[in-house]
Structures are given as C-alpha cells and as structure tokens.
Image 1: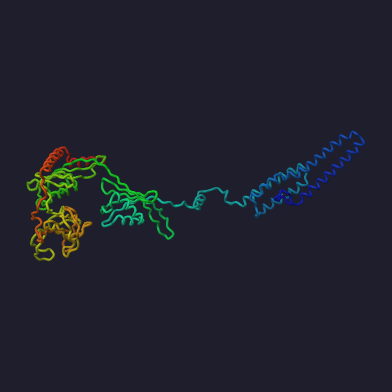
Image 2: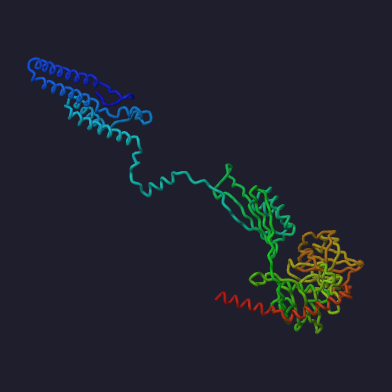
Length: 562
C-alpha cells in the first residue's frame, strides 16, 4: 500500500476496503445495541433511557471512524488545485537511506489503519512530517550541491570572472598636431585619422572665419575625437575610425578659431576675439657689438629690432657703417592682457639712429589716413627708397663687387654682385616692388630669383635654400616681402646670398647705386606730420623705459620663485 495521492485527490490501494470493513463492524455493533435496547424497552421501562444513551454512543463511534479515515488526507483538494502550477518530480534516484525512510513511512501508514482513533491521529501527524521531509530532500537533490556552501574570496572572484564583461563605450580624446612646411590642413587632419569627408566639412566650416591658406608651418592645431577604447577591434582586425568632434587653433594672440560638430553631424565654427589694452614703451642704448645684440640687452623685443633695421636699410649699411659708440632710441606700442602683462608688440612710432656722428630720426605717419603709412624724416621726406641696399637681416658682407679670385674655380673673375653670409634659412626680402621673372634653378647660381622693377631696374638673388610660398614667375611682390631663404645651392662654398642689381641690362654695384627716394610731405600733410611729432615727443617723456620694465618683471619672477 502506498500513501501517494493522484491528481484528483483520491487514495490508491486497500484504503477503500479498510474503510468499508470498519463501517460494517460499527454498523453490526450498533444494530446489536439497538436490538438489546428495544427488548429492554418492551420489557422494562427503566431501560429506555439506557438504550438512548447507547444509541448516542454508537453514532459518536461512527463519526470517529469517519474522521479517522479523512484526517490523513486533509489538504488533498488544495493540492489538486495547485498541482498544475507546482513543480513536479518526474524521476529521481533514491539513496539507500532514502529508501529505508520511505519503507518506514509506509509501515507507519499500514499500522495506523489498525490502531484506535487516538493512535490513528498520531500516526497521521507522523506521516505528514515524513512527507514534508521527503519533499525537502527531493528539492535539495535537484538543486546545486554547492548552493548552500559558504562564499569565499576565491569563489566570489571566480563568479565575477564568469559574468559577461561590461560593453565597451567610446571615449573622448584630444591631441595636438603641427602643420609641416608645405602641408595643408586637409592633409594634417587625414594624417591624424580624421575621415576624409569629415575633414572636408570641418575645413569648409572654418573658412567662414579664417582661411586655411593663411596657416603657416609650425601652427599648432588641437583635435578632439570620440573613439573606441584600446582593444576594441573590428571584424577584420582593423581599429575603428576616429570620430572628429572639434578643431581649435589660435592663428594669432588676439583671436582663436574653433570648429565643433553639431548634434545633427554637421560642423559649425566660431571666432573668439581677445581684447587688450595698449601701452607705449621707449628704450635707448649704445652700440658696442651690434645693433641687434645691444638693442636686445636694452630690453627691445626682437620684432622691434628687425623693424628698425628695415627702417634704415634704405640708407644705412649695417655691415660697414655701424661702429662702436653709435647710439639708438626707439618708441613703440605694446599690448597688455587683463593682468597687465605684455602679450604682443605693436608698431614703431619713432626711432633715432646715430651713425658716425650723424643722427637719423624717423616717424611713422599715414598722410592720407588710408593705411598707406610710411616713415618720414624731420623734413617730411620718406626714407623709403626705390630699392633696399641690403635685402637681408643680420647678414655679414663676405664679398664685394668687382674683380676677385674665385674661391672654387681658382682664377680671377668679375664678381658682378655682393655676397651676404648668413645662416641657412635666413629670410630674404624683395628689394623693391616688382614682378618675379624667374624662380627656379639656374646653372651655377642654384636656386635663383629675379625681379623686374620700374624704370629698367632688375634685382637677382642666388644660392637660395628655397622659395617662399606663392613666389613663382609672374607673381607681384612688394618691397620688404619675403621671397626666399638663404642657402648654399649651386656653385657655393657656404650659406650666403648673392645679390645683384641690373640697370637697363647692365650689372651695377648695389652698395654704390644711387636710387631715387620716396615721396615728400607738403601743405596740410606736412602740418599734420609736425603735430604728430610734437605729440610723440610728449608721450615719450611719460612712457616707461623698456629696461626698467624688464628689470621689474625679473624682480617679480624672483619673488615668485622664493
């Protein structure tokens, strides 16, 4: 006999037969009692009460018998209602201990069927407890045996390692690139990993604020990207392309250009202008070594020194005429930031140069107030001549004009120009306004440039290391414009500039050539120029010396360091 329930809440085996045998015995016993009671009632009335009591007792016994059979199966109906939703054990392997426990449970059930009512109730409780224990055992047998084991650091680490890794996400990166000589902005962006189409649209957005053609070699450009982290590889093993988000650069100290990607994927640009305050500085000194070195020691910035050399390059030969004891003075503007720190040098408003006891004074003046300014002397005469005497800065005259022994050929030969020795890469300027007639390699002259000027004048520049951007045959150039750089190409023993001047096809000595001067102020323009001179004289008296400004800055740096 078994104690398992079927899906409808009924019992299997001998349970119905046992129930009917008990009911039959109880009925027979009750019938005998009623018969005896009837006989007594007919015979003696005193037994009537006794027969009623016995009848009640028999009914009670029947109720107890029924309760003893139904009690072990309480909750069967509930189990039947939830059987379809509850998990079922289809089959499981029982161990010997489990088989022994099941056999003991079945024996208890069979014994309970023969016990009196009170013992039957106790046996039913025992059977319920055994069934509960069996269900728990079956549930544990299906679970992970290690589920209830204590967790350790090793087990936790192993479990974490088995979990799937978090998905990789793009990250923001920034980099700075520099524009190489002859390189375009498009090439810089593509070399940095920017998609060609993105690079094109980004450059187009910048053009509205700043022309990429104006960028010079060495210009730093900041790039911002969104890219996949290291280790994120495509299906074919390639690294995913970078996603450009922003470009920023500062073409000069006063403004910054930024191009950013919009939400819709397009690019937009903007320009930021910094505002500075303007001040004025004066400086003076004595030449002991060279104008450049002594002016720098006096606190004059290199840009201002170079401008002074250009101002006087039309009338002063800095290689032969400058002597120790000569003096200089300069008054120039300077821009300051919000912290009152100098950030940019301005214009030379006045300069004075004493050479061989003769003082040359110049003032910056714009007669027509149209931007066509020039430098004028005390009488209102422009110091700008038709051609510059020395179209190069800081050079040394290494060979003059005339007959000489050629350093390479070894015999005497006419030297139809002058040579200026200078470091490789030193800028070379156009001696005057004109049109380039040649800009290529030309025999023993190496890289060669020739410029045609007005009135039959022509200048030539040889042994160049390279040409300035945009300089080619047919190009119009202005006086003082950079056209090339010092080199040693062609028949040359070292880096230098070979400079020639031709007048109507005849080669002339550039240093001895008398060229016409520029314009002369008259009338209202001359009067305005004299007023300007007076104002500058007053301002110079109030302006601080550059040497004192430099000394104060050095003192502040010392305090900060301490």
